[in-house]
Picture 1: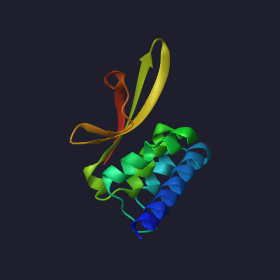
Picture 2: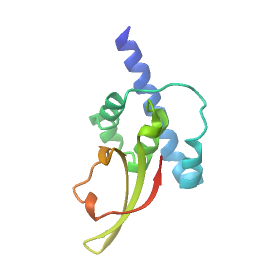
Picture 3: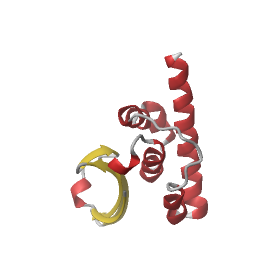
Picture 4: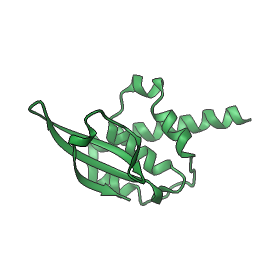
Length: 126
């Protein structure tokens, strides 16, 4: 039974990642951030399980954006107010880059990056 629940959770995680990948392109970031406030269903997933799923080889193969993964994490996590979605920008080797990640108590929970300290935080969502 536990295996079936985990399979269903992974299907939901997959669907939400794909949803945010599309919404980011079609409607923009503001719409996606506002969608976090709406609770269409009451599924809440353990942070460790959700982080492990989003960092799994399967999701790496799909190459979802860091923003889509961060939005999915924030949408599905148990106790979402404990986690902060952060968007930052940086110029690395002359190239403008943006990155989104999740923090809890100033520790990165999802989407760590070796250059994370070079990103200037321009947006946070608790």
